[in-house]
Each structure stands twice: as structure tokens, then as C-alpha cells.
Image 1 (cartoon, rainbow, N blue to C red):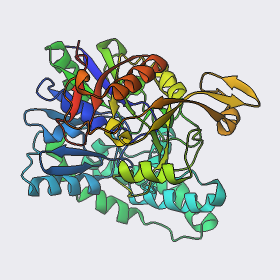
Image 2 (cartoon, rainbow, N blue to C red):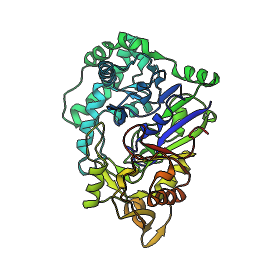
Image 3 (cartoon, rainbow, N blue to C red):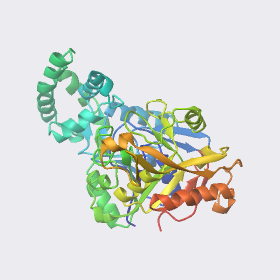
Amino acid sequence: MPAIVIVGAQWGDEGKGKATDLLAGRIDYVVKFNGGNNAGHTVVVGDEKYALHLLPSGILTEGVIPVIANGVVIDIEVLFNELTALTARGVDVSRLKVSANAHVITHYHRTLDKVTERFLGKRQIGTTGRGIGPTYADKINRVGIRIQDIFDENILRQKVEGALDQKNHLLVKIYNRRAIAVDEVVDDLLSYAERLRPMVADTALELNTALDAGKTVLFEGGQATMLDVDHGTYPFVTSSNSTSGGAATGSGIGPNRIERVIGIVKAYTTRVGAGPFPTELHDEQGEWLRSRGFEFGTTTGRPRRTGWYDAPVARYSARINGITDFVLTKLDVLTGLERIPVCVAYEVDGERVDEVPVSQSDFHHAKPIYEELPGWSEDISGAREFGDLPQAAQDYVLAIEAMSGSRISAIGVGPARDEIVVRHDLLG
């Protein structure tokens, strides 16, 4: 079987775990290829709810090998806290593989993230303060610490010294913070070495070998398309490539291995943090969506910004990622609305624009052009076939499918794993 990539098609929090659940029992590996513990996802298994931040959702599926690949940045303390919590709940975490080439989030990365964000004042980007951006910056600047460095104290110390030579000047002279001692960082990282060692592998080799053997490998993107560092609403983005192309570079497989790209899109839109959001609602309807959809960050607890479905954003995501199938989530949240607005285009400087503007300034000032679709009042959580949905709900799905650039193959009708309508096989 080929590689399959799952990506968020909006600004994150679309419910990517729902698609992963759909493929349970048909996949052999689940791979996290970007990001860190700056975003989480909630997976509901029966009556149990699991909030995952750094681990791929495959950790919860028996027989699936979960992989944290080279494109991820890892806070080792968070990793072990998550593993310990899952073990206490009876989850077998022994299958986890961690790339030797993944970069490590250190104490100084977290410190720099917080102080630089505060220093920006009104120009804040809205980071989570977990050190993700500074770690990726060190990676690009070639002064980063990799997982493999933890097993060689001499190399680790040299790299930490090199990194802190510059960073301590910045902390002390610019931000008026104390200098961070090399020993403090080195001793902390070395304390994890023996526990970490059994998990570390050449994950790129293992994944390619698995694909050669006909295994099915699922690549699970963190964040989402509109937060991609190249293709998102820069600079209000994450620090990695969260689009489908990032799956190849972030894991070490060739792009020709990828045959299916599944985009996850909510039946409305949400965003966390600063940045443009054309359909954002600042009224009672926005609060209603937030309350009904329980739109609060899995990792941060921050209230998410809410708005109506944005078809140009979905089309943009379909184009950038090469999306073959959409999974539409949280359709049930819209139940009870008499009319449902859908953004079909924007007005920019008095002119209609049908696609996401390439200019950040234009996108920031874009006003949504809406079409209203009839709503429904019936409970749809029991629907398992498309025909089980009320006619207005079917019409809503078909209307946004026609606007969004790819087919909608599955529809989430509730939070539980089995509360989903499947229209097309995601693997075929």
C-alpha cells in the first residue's frame, strides 16, 4: 500500500483524529512528521477521552506502530509525561519509535519563546510559549540539538555551549533575564538518555522498508495548511511545513510514495492565535459556535476564534496539498440553525476575489461574501449513511463539496469514533 497523508485544511483543530480512527485496523504505522507539543488533538475511545499533544494518535491503536519522525521537535519531558499518563490508563506505549534526527526542545528554547513573544507587545504572533519556533530556528541555523546527541555527552556539551554563547548575551543584555548555565541544560538532557535509548531508531529507513514490504503508513500532520510556514498566513503561522509536502521531508520518504492526501475540514471554521480570519464572528453566533463545538484548545485551553465555513480556504488547501478526499467534521454542531452562511468569495477594495489573495494585506482586509443555505433541526448523531441525514444537511454537504475542490468522503456527525458517515473509501 502507498503512504497516506492526513492534513488540516483550515487553521487547525479540525479533528484529524476522526480520519485516523476511520482507518484503524487498516494501517500499520502512524507517523507524526512536523510540529511539537504546541498543538494537540482529542481522541474519544468509547467512554474514554485522550488528549494527545506530542504523540501520534496511533499510540492508542493496538498493533499500530507510532512514529515521531525527524521533522518533529521534541520536548522530552512532555514526551515522558504523556507516555506515563497513557501507561497509567492501561495503554501499551512500548511500540513507539523516535527519530534519531528529530530536534530537541531545551529549557532555553522555552525561555526565549516566552520572552520574545512578550517583547513583541501588540505585534505578538500568538505562540504557545513551548519553544517550538526557537527550536526550529536553531535547526535552520545549524546550532540545534538532535535526539542522537543526547547519547554522546561530549558532542552534546559542545553543541549546548555553542548555542548558549549567543543566547545568553540575548537573554541578559536585551531581555534582562539571567544567563542559562551549560551544565543545567546538559544534565537535564542526559537524565533522559537511558529511558529514551530503546525508542530511538533510523525511522526513515524503517518507514521505507515498511512501504517496500506493502505496509500501510499514515502520516499525520500537526497544525494545518493555513499555519504552514510557507503557505499559511505568514507571519501568523507555525514554524514548520504542515502541508502534505512536509510529510516527505519530515519523515524521509520520497514524495512519489504518497498516493492519497486526506484533508480535514470543519463544517465551520476556527482559529487560535493572531492573524487574518475573514469569516470570524464577534457576536452571539460566534459564541454559540464556540459553546456548541466546545472550541477550546486541547493543549492550551485557549478559546478558539470561530467563523463560518470558508470555501476559498478549502479550495486553496485542496490545491496546495493535492487533496484527494475531504473529511468534514462537526456537522452536528450546526444542527438547530435556520440558515447557515457559507463564504464563497471575498470583497477586497470593492472588488470580488474568488480565491485566497496572495497578498497578506489583501487577505487581512478581505470581507467575506456569503451565500446562505437552509439549516436543519433534526439530531444527526445517529446517521451512518448519507441518506440518513436530513435533506438540508445533505444539501449543505453537497453545496460546500462543489465549492471546495475535492470530494467529501466522510462526515463527522458527533464526537465519538463511530459517529461518522462514510461516502467513499479513504483508501480507494
